[in-house]
Length: 312
Image 1 (cartoon, rainbow, N blue to C red):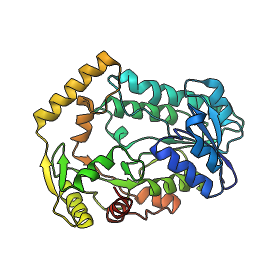
Image 2: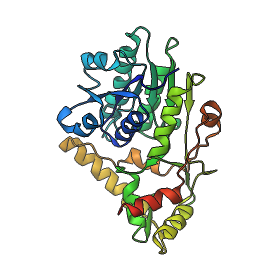
Image 3: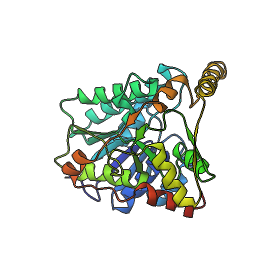
């Protein structure tokens, strides 16, 4: 059984989810070893007590150092921007393969938790979704490893750069909708996701499973519900704005053309739009709660109140 003060390795440690995860692990008494590209830019992690390993997923020596003496390794690093399939595969597939090889080289191999994405459920939609599914499949083929895959839905909270702009716009009275207002999505606050990850690490019975945690809202949210909750939070009417399809398509196409000239990785592309317009990103907690006992604590009402109170 994995428990404090066991040593946990973490990739993606300086990202939105990774930084919260490292903090949560340390607060619970675990020791943390974090893979970081630049130790100088990870001073907060060092101050919290994490051991830093300088390097990247493309550096076998760094991954060997990261995995040494670890009871578990959480692979949270991932590419979310790109202008072609290769941009995503380089990190989400090849990087995952490198982490798996590093884990297999240890004796005994540490438990490996792959932080994937709900997008992997629909790999036909985008380069990102396909790369996340391929990364999962690499791990699922490893019969000799103790692994867990987590597929969270949209994650929000302090430090978020994807959902935060949406909530920021809602706080001003407008909810921008890329697809149908009836589309349904599940959400999870980053604090609850961290607790779900740690619960999976600690649970001996959770192995070789793919689990999807959420905030517990049955059937997720549609845009009308999110706008109503945001309106109650900021004491104002929040109107839905269905962004014209032609406008989003045009912006995404231009982004892609510019990216291929400039080399900069865009977020909004035609592939990303297919994700945003998908009508069903709903999950429930039945399986993960039965396996670990974990339950979420932060629903959208509470999450938005906390964002409001932190001067969103």
